[in-house]
Length: 330
Image (cartoon, rainbow, N blue to C red; front, side, top):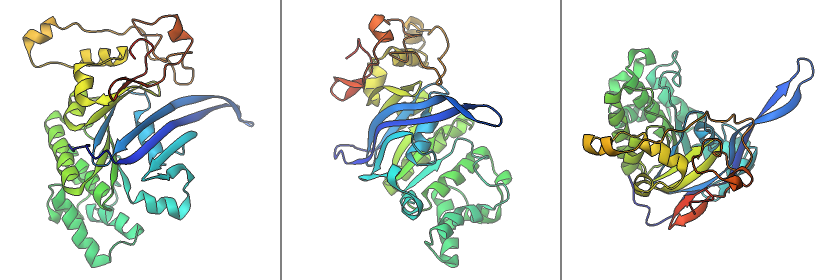
């Protein structure tokens, strides 16, 4: 984890939206609605820090990461990376900028080409961007394998010959091959055994310290997010409902949804755990194609009032840099 005292902004996301169109008809496709996967998200990430992004499955976390990297083109809003709006870049300019931004995927097996050797996969980005010649590429691949704790003799092996943790290390090696500044970690440990998860997280922290990386760490394991993150943003149904430093979020959650999430995190103290009151949310998460009017959380919120069904709350400062989107918490 890194110090953010210099507060140099590397990535600035403003009012980011990503809608997926819903169409009907066989011969003539009619646009009948949108799935609002990301609906007006704003935040910034400082150089060298880790911003954790948490929330329930389907809340739009992965879509935020993919839209930042322009794997999905945004419907609206802007993504400024080092003062350059990525949404305005195309072709060669976007390809050159992508060298500085990479992604570690959730499934370490599905994200690796089963027909390519480890050496082929790790040298491919070097070839695409014309970074090194053949001999230098081989040396760089061996260096990358050692960097992530694997033997350089693995270069001629295929993905099926590795365990899940080893495959994820290969994915991490591929992500750092081009020496990027920013990496989106899309639930990189959720598909791994619990015994391996901490090893992978420790590796990510070591690489951050060694290479000066900046992370957007997407996850739903709140205890792991607390361990690796400097600040944490909480998402619900396409929107950020709370954003603060990790200690404030865990000791003083302000949004009712965050409080419910935190009450589900087990505490390794049986005395404290027994006294603690769990917050059980009623009902299901609304469909992102038809979100409720007003606050997105009003259908499940225990403190919702009339204004919550009429007016959408803005993400406003509550205490210092602690920001929350709730009519009754700011």
